[in-house]
Length: 230
Image (cartoon, rainbow, N blue to C red; front, side, top):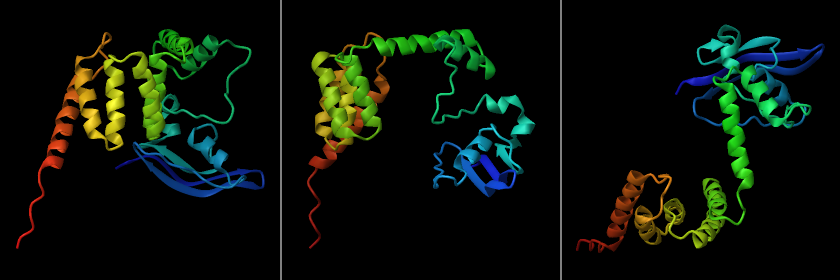
C-alpha cells in the first residue's frame, strides 16, 4: 500500500531550541497513525508541520507524490487539523464561522454546504432524548465502538417505542449477531424486511444477504458431527 503521507528528515528549531530532530515516517492510505510521547517531545510541532501550519527548518513532507509547496493551496483543502482549542472566532456567529472557513478552504458551493450543516445540527439538537430515533442512533454509535451490551440496551429501548421500524430491527439484529446470538438475530432481519421504512433507509439487499448467511450458519450448527473413523 502506498504512503499517503511521508516525512523525511524533518527538523524544526526555534533559535537554539531543537523542537523536532530528524523525524522520518510514512503513513499508508486508509490507516490510523498514533504519535505518542511525553510533554515537550515535539508532538504538536510535528503535527503543525504535517498540517502545513508550520514550515520545517530542514527535511520535507510529501502528500502522495508531491510536497505541500508543489501542490499549493489544493493540499490544504484536503487536510484537517483538530487541536485542543476550537479555533473559532467568538465574535462571529456559527454561520459566519462556517462560511469563513468554507471559503478559506475553497469549498465548492460554500453557502449551500453551510446551510446543510446547520440544518443537520439543528435536527440533532431538536431530537428528543427519549425518542426512538435518538435511542437508536446512540445504540448504533455504541455498536461502532464495540460496546455491545450498552448498544443492545439502547436499541431495545428504541424498539420498545417503535417496534415496527425496519432500520431499528436491522440494527438490533446486527448487534445480536456480533454477540454470537445469530438465532435471535435471524427473525429480526426477516421482520425488518416487512417493517416500516418510509424514508427507504434500509439496505434491503444487504439484509437479505445477512439472512442467507445466518441461515447457512444455523444449518451448519444443526448438522450432526461426522463420527470418527474406526
